[in-house]
Image 1: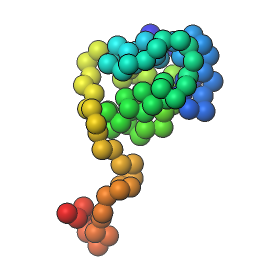
Image 2: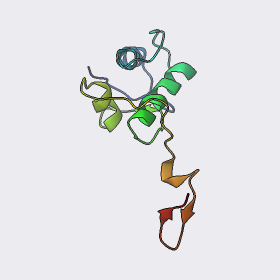
Image 3: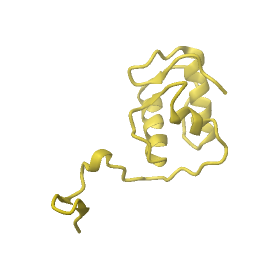
Image 4: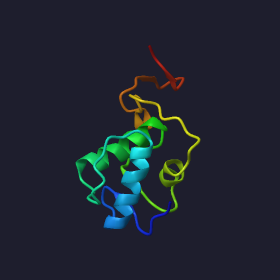
Length: 102
């Protein structure tokens, strides 16, 4: 499936493109109403999908980016309840060795 414009947070969000993304998200197990509206549930589903793949969760799907390629793929496994922390936020690091501390 393809889209013409971006979908998600701060995106173009045409009705037909949003429906395409919603169908793909539902195919990957997200509970969404396919209505063509890019509301909070769709934004959160896009973020959840990105977190499950360890992609930066910007809630933005564009035609030339990884999120759409993975959404359109049948050969991926989503990691549920992933604790993705972009740029180490939420983790403690030892700045002398740049290794995580426990």
